[in-house]
Every structure is written in structure tokens, then in C-alpha cells.
Length: 483
Image (cartoon, rainbow, N blue to C red; front, side):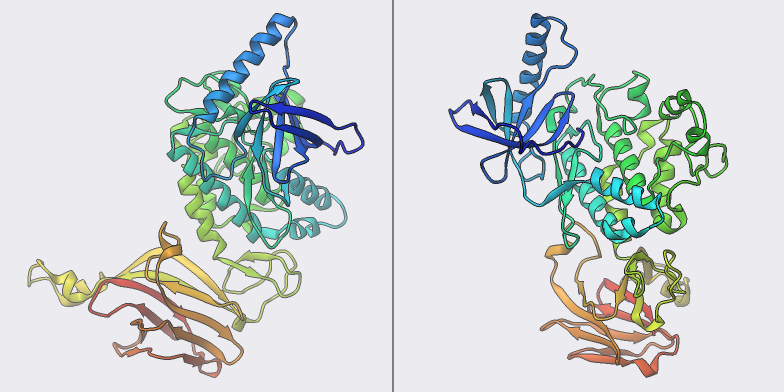
């Protein structure tokens, strides 16, 4: 659905729903091939008025409207409760078909953010637009939220269908990263044989363009990956220099999956120079998912990452970001703490990397094992790295909980301690009645932390520490850091 200008200057219209409720259309926020979405005289209520494209006769128009209404009625029976998707609440019956949907104030389409960032990038202002539209970290937050919404939708046996920057609305305020999906007409059940080929140019999966498939979760995964790559890098994953500098027909060839993607590890024939480098906008786990989608998944949809995988990796990536003290952008943590956007070197004492481990006590790990196995060999297996990490930044408290980071129940897990990096050192504040311990990796000495403790800034000497979030004789989460 394309974004259009306000209709405030036009004469307002009135429509009526199936229950006799009247709505005054006060403007429009979007339009597409299937209709126009309008604001109304009621806060947080939108109306979509159907439009029939391609009907040559009145009979064809009636048939197309009947098909559309049937689809909307089926959509009204789908389990969409609790999801931030503007879906039909009531049918509009006069003066022409449509439906009523709930909405949230203060949202703009991702398409606007993309356009602002790209236009600025192509001008003398460079990355200013990228930073002013949220920078790297906010983009990751928005994409993680969107991935979660789509993963939940897929978990209910549904596919969204026509995912594009014009159909994804996000918080206008940079302080928030709320996500709301609009234009739900093409949501379809995976139990139905969906032959719908509706898509937005640049975002449709290759198999849809080739006429080999309709809407499903695999095509959603493709559309999401394209949107995510463009949002992060300001470049299309299939439009490298070869396509952009070539004949118009070459673009269609690329979108049909007949050319390598722009970051292909060995075939650089379609590499890109446009946009922000992947080296500074994608971390290694994200690069792996994009490679999985656009290389292995180019011709084998089953190889594409699920939206749950995207949600997990994007959520982890959020915690790896550092804010630049000079240009105010956010970037992925590196040992040098050099901002790739402006080159500023951050103070090394303003950020601390923590890596998550699972600890299994030696006694539990030794149960059932042969006495011939050396204890030193078993002890090495006590520590299991989860692959998760998070950056603690100065003056921003970090809460650590009883469950592994970013698991589905983490938000509701009990608080064990709070970490805060200040000018005078690292403060560790245990929650009431919790059992946490600090261990220096160089020895086996374990100190219980019963009240607020500080590791002084003056004592920093590249020493490894383990912060145990549980009793030493029980399995628990451990955070490793260097001080």
C-alpha cells in the first residue's frame, strides 16, 4: 500500500457499517490496488474502502467485490487477537464495501523512514538522515518487534502476504519502537491452498514472480529479509551495481532470482557499492541469516530462516550496540570502540562487554561417569557458552534475571541483580534475598554478594570475572566480563 497525502482539503464523506454505525472519513493514510485507508472522526479508528482494479464490466466488478468481501469475512474469523495488526472489526455496507479497523496514534510507515534516510544519504548530509530516523539500534528494535509479530502470526497458521515498508507502521517518536501492520486483506490460512500472488514490487519472493507459488510463510520470510536488509543498509539485496547500471530488464531478472545476491560470498558479479556497508550495519549472526535467505533460500524457500530465528538474532543484536558520544549514532561493539559512522574513539571505560554462560557444577556433571575420566577434563565442561552477549554502557543500569537472556519468559523472570557502570567503577546490586556470587577466573575463590558491591575503576587490570546468578552447587546462568 502506497503512502499518499492527506485529504483534509477534500469534502468529507460518510460511510455506514453493518451495525448502522456512521463514520466520517476525514483523510487518507494509504492507498493500494485493493482500496483506500482513511482516518475517521473517531480516534484510533480507520476505514478501508474497497476499490476494484481491472474490472472491465459491471458484472466483473460485482464478482471481484464479492470475492473480496468473502476474503474479508474469512479474515474476520481468523485468530488475530492480541496482535498489532489493523484487521477488520466490522464491514462497511454503504455507500460501497469496506471495513472498520482499530489503530494506534503516532505512527508512520517505515517507507517514510527509508525515504528520508536514503535521500539524505544521497545528498551532502550523508548518514545524518539514517541517524535522525533512529540509527542502527532503533532499526534493530523495530525489526525484532516486527519479526516477533510475524512469528506469532505464523504460529497461528497464518501468513501475512504483502509485507512491505508501506504496510509496516512504527512509532514516530524515536523513544519508542512500536510496530503496527496495516492492509491485512491478504492474510491467508496455511490450511487453505493459497494461490494469491499479491506482492509489492521489490518485496515479492522469486517464486511468486515466477508464478510458481502463492502466499505462505516462506514468502513472508523473504519479504521480511528484503525489508530488513534495506532498512539496515539502505540497499536492495538483489540490486547490485550490475543491476543498477544495466538495462531495465536486468532488474526483473534479479528479482526472479536469476542473479546472485549482492553479498554473495564467492560470486561478486552483482556486488553493490550503493548504501551503507554491511560490515558496519550487520553483525555476524545477521550476516549468516541474510546469506541463508538470499543464497541458499533463493531457489529453496525451505532454507530461509523462520521469523522466530530472525526475532532471536535481532533481539540479541540490540544488546550489542554502543552509543557514540560524538555523533550520537549507535554501532556494534568492538574492542576499539571506534564509531564506524564518524570515527570517534569512545572512552574504554564507558562500555563493558558481558558474555553469557551456563554453569553445571562438577558434582552434577560427574554423576554416572566413569572414575577413569580425569576431573580436569570434566571441569572444562562445567562452562557452556550460550553465544549471547550484552554491552553495559555507563550510567545505563542493566538488570540480570534468573533465566537466560532473551528467552520467551525472560521478561517475567525474577530479578537477581542490577549492574551499573559509573565513573568510580562497576556497581553490582543484588535484589532482595537473592544468591549471587563473584569469582575471579584466575582462582577458585568465590565471594557472595549480599549488598551493593563495587569493582573500582582504579583496579581495572584485564582480569576475567564470573558473576554467578545462583548457588554454586546448582546449575545456573553466569556472566563473564573482563575488568
